[in-house]
Image (cartoon, rainbow over all chains, first blue to last red; front, side, top):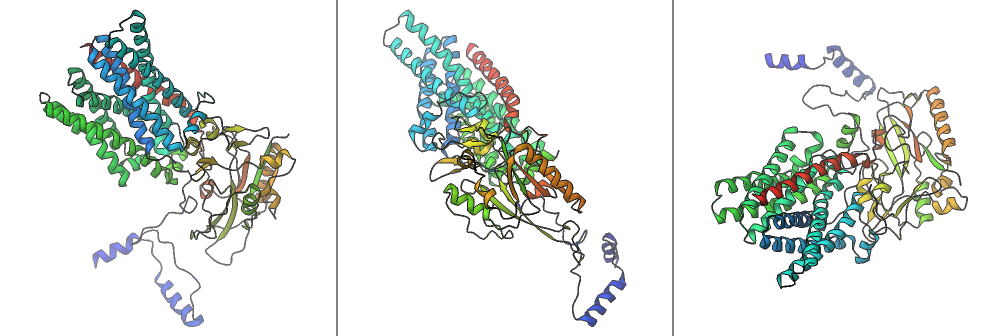
Length: 339
Length: 257
């Protein structure tokens, strides 16, 4: 009895006479004119008024094919590898210089292939080089990739020529210059993709524009060192870099989870949320823990490196997929613009 | 040639879709959208690569002006022909890496089909979700503002085909004045929620396709405060620069140790 009372008290009361009215109207006319009420409280939640056009998306989802997130991964890896090559050259580790340059060069060959696969025709890539637009991250990226490939190619040629005995002064100087510009363009190559996503209308990308560069750069650098380690270079330097990038990945994931913003829902919920979490756990805490706990074991280092590579790759796909989900949610867009 | 604009009026649109058909026939855009969306009489859903005019059908529990409904549940059926906004500061144009998207002398934003390489960056750069990539051709398409017709002194096909002058076309300031007058008239007649949608206050800086609507812009899927994404260039690149410097220092430090 008590519970029934409190139940009726919780919702706005209709007078008992209303029920009599309804019966009398039904008896008199054979039909009821009114159609009921909009429930404010009660067993069925009140559905808020629709604010978007039939719940249709406002924005268009990204049209990019699977090659683009893979390119983000490869570009970040190659760009960071060129930075490692320069740093290794400065410290005199010539074996590392050679392998890092070759990793960067391989990435410089794969990247345009992936981009052309997305565009459909090789000649379409040339259209990217009609103009140079500072305001278009896509334009900056295209020119950076061309510059990067050229400098890395030159650096690799110099390195190999020096190794087979052509150690002329001008070749050594040329290698330094090529490595410097390869590292510089490599840094842009590894970071511009985050700006590319951040400067769009897609809510989840745009609202994370300040966080994305650290995630993408950490991902690229961590992947480059992971490939170095898998290639057999288990150096103290790669261990230090590995620990720091995994810590950055962990911190970024914690920030996304802790902020709990509506706009970040594709990063936390649904299939894209689990994809994001899987990537973040592998590249972040999993890789970090293995590195710290099994620091002396070769196997441990290799497992940590592999976990990071897989995590970073999954992360790139998750970010693109999250953008696709975000573009379909008109409320995410309206919420940012109303506040 | 004068800088021109569309003024599309939801209060006189009858939902006939003559604009959609006229657009497709004049511009040789393939017929599509013969699907049942279940959203009133809408079958094209939203603007896209092959839908450059889209007639919306809104069913709202609200009173239409001074309408006498004879019921306690007011209802209104609204129509509006959506179109590319041809922004003053256009996200697609700024994003385009090839220079395919240009501003014409009539103030419109035009995609040059022979230059576009289908990178898709304009698609995510548009704050209104207008431009899209056609996957058969592989490049981006949207309303051309009938640039070909305008150069020959003709009004765009949709405006010409509109039977109720819901789509008006003319010099941009004249259109802005007409929009103002129309909203004032509507308010006098009891349409208290009549307003102009022309985001001049935002970074988009106004559009060459403005609308007279009833109720909130969100109901028409118009962003209440659209922003051209490139306003965030500075903050995004700054964050990238900071991270890049840290990466460089970290790597140098690690290999120096």
